[in-house]
Length: 120
Image (cartoon, rainbow, N blue to C red; front, side, top):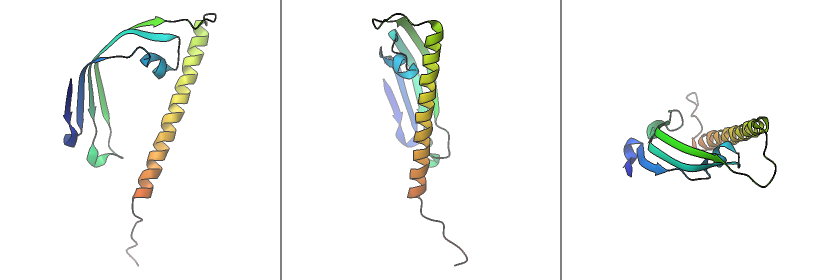
């Protein structure tokens, strides 16, 4: 189910199914799979008037996941190796998000007209 208040900047999704590959994508670990997953409610609030300076709020309620480890045909990695892989994936995800943020700021700066000099 979906409830939208576009002009108020609100979006609410309820009773969502979590895809089996979602955890592997988020954590960057292909040896984990969501066996069953449900998300009770996801709420987004986007302040359109202050899109660049305001805070986007995301609320997640009732997330239930049953996760299983799957093999890829190779020998199973140790827990230490899995933690190392997950940390590296998280570092890469942070780098991507930081790059996206820099691009958004540049785009915003290019779209704004230059300041008018009052002394001229």
